[in-house]
Image 1 (tube, rainbow, N blue to C red):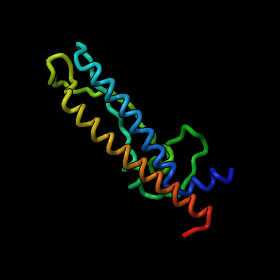
Image 2 (cartoon, helix red, strand yellow):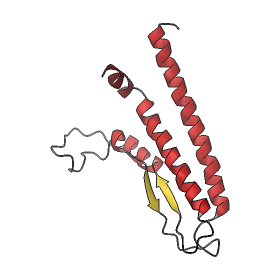
Image 3 (cartoon, rainbow, N blue to C red):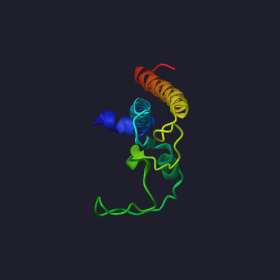
Length: 138
């Protein structure tokens, strides 16, 4: 209970979601690459960062929901943002077989790897600060 309360007021829950989104995106990109020659395959993508930016920019309006299925007042909160896998409905056909462009997917793979490494290092730094605070050393 104490640890839950401690971590709730840090960047760690948001970093955890970011790492989870990168892991999901890694699997989706790998799946796209594996199906690059599959006739009629439609590529998948992950939506997370756009939704997170919208939640961070939302206006702070006071209100409460009396039921979990109600629309959140003032837009979604950051705690409710989750990565979502969706199918790209792109009519272009770069490979001649489906809408998967292997060069684009490889670039996305490299970009995702950099995002994952950056988030992991940032999380490690936050854990180091918490560890330092617990030990009481500057």
